Length: 315
Image (cartoon, rainbow, N blue to C red):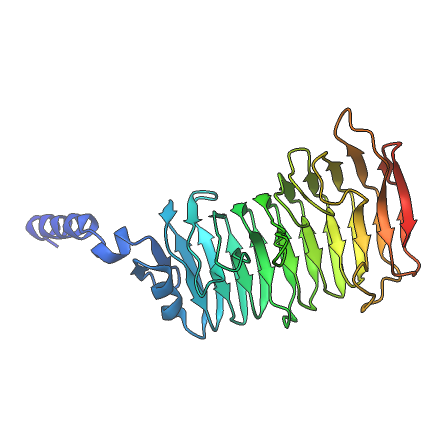
């Protein structure tokens, strides 16, 4: 190749390298990783995945929008964890994300100020499929995550924070930081619950519950109830958590309640071990760490409890 041809080729390469990406892909807040297509709305990105599998990358920003997933397996991933906020908008009068596909994963997102007319709004409303939530924040709303009562899948929550959530009005249903009203397993690891504004921090009706290596800081809570409500009994593990009960409680009689609404599932073998629990400084009251209405054999061992806290109370 002669010198003139080499110069021509070099100029062509520079032009190609400098050519901008299509405007939609470069500027769009929502990009489907597998196709590279960009969208201005989350709903549009979800529709493009359809019944298949895809990862939607979400650019930093505050979004006054919501979306419904009806099919497929979709991951919703913040490009920078904690930088993508879904603020104050709920679809179908339910949630910022209404998930009814085969599976979903939510990573690095923030959900805030989600409230609806019936008082049961949520950051995520899970109606079908398995769900994984990682490094996400739910704050200052009604429910953080609300699971439909006919749901059968598994919910896994890791390294996430639930702050300023919950309500329990006199003439309506209560909202909770996490409410698994379905039959599937709920698994919570390395997460934080704080500053509740009513209801329970974790309420689950599923047959299996695991809550490990997490913290429940109720010191700034307002009109809160149990830290963990195992409404209809469950097997599983509650281990290596830290609990602090605050003063302003709607119900301070226990930290963890087992089968308070009837033992529909077996609690035999439920293990509550290696936890630490106390009251806020200066608070003098008697309470129970575990209140059990199941009547089954529950293992309660190696927990470090403040003197005012009885390890177990049978109800």
